[in-house]
Length: 279
Length: 308
Image (cartoon, rainbow over all chains, first blue to last red; front, side, top):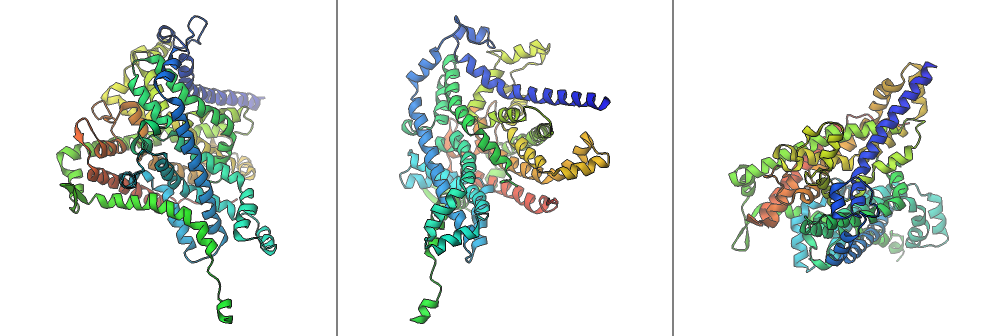
């Protein structure tokens, strides 16, 4: 009896703490989203009220769509993220396969060399990266960003994928060899489909930092035509500081795509972090 | 002829598999990092790079115009890191411990929501909190008023003594889900038998956490600490988004990342200086390297890993 009562208290306390934190996590997002649909007056008078029939307004969104090229920014972010992810996954998986499958001189050393980048952030090299991009005429191109993000994503991708490639059954690969498959066919047709879950994990891990990065777009591609959504909203908000409707709408427009992506990928992300890939 | 055939053929496919990753990684990451380190030993004289040895570092650490900013940024960065270690990681562990209790309902929902801030960009997070804490809008004073603490309100982001701590806490708010998930995963991997054995010895609830689980998740806490360290000493975006490149008020929120950006690109007050920018990057590299080595050789080796 006593024990049962104590358990109830425990569970009330547990839910109390978690619920408090959940509210704290959601509160800013909630406040931004609801106020982006209100008139200026209502934003200031009743900041915590949901937009009602007489306070509803989309004036902020109209300003944003008129003033900033948000569709272009969104498209840039999408291209950079998707293409970088493609190369990180393809090249990362190829290298991981070679490291996991073949014994050759310097295998361990090469693995260590590639793993260096997990701990040393690429930002340290920014000064020289910019110099290089200026010299090769890649400044203000999406290619510059794609190259940098590919390089940035590879170390962790190779590290995680090597672990998974080692678990693919030896017999399967040898059966393929006996059937006369080339090493390339073994990799693309037998091994890659088997490590798809690990690839998804790597993709989700890389997607968020690439999409959200402000540093490299600001330094390598700040031109109007190549702005990413993150940089675009930063610049836009900086210019419209006093127009609260526009600022709130711009923030919401930056939040919504990420939230949608998160809803789609959240299980993958959580499974990825908790799957022991990071031990 | 026979001899040639018997010799193992050179395995071109290994090269093909490795080449793209190794080339891109080396060309875009490793070489620029070393070039940056190299550039910190040069200075610009009439558009020509001239070797000056350690002079840039002497300037950075000793010359009044630079040293004040550098030590200020380093001090602020250390405080930024301290707050993460003192708030983010303990609260993350607490949340994970609660989440991992076996019969908790809605665990998946809590878990999913608590990570949401971590997926938002620094720009969103910075501005969202700036608006909420703004005395103009009044959400924060209104909330404090509703619990009778209105007198506590101050424009935290605008005051030199509070701005950095406030920003650190905003960053903690954003990233708390990451340590939470990692610890959560570590807690889930503790086998039932170990806990049951503890229960037989009378260890339940809090004491079970303290005496059984905590020692078992120490390696994960170590990883979180080093990830926090690298992330914090490389931070830039949140400060830039919320306070701008000048890291106001009066450099109170300046950290190494914003200092490097300002030096490298210049701002209203000074011209950009590539070589001093590289020098600051080298200092950051050294700090991160020392931290990582300390972790690898001093901490990780002493932590016992348990295999179940």
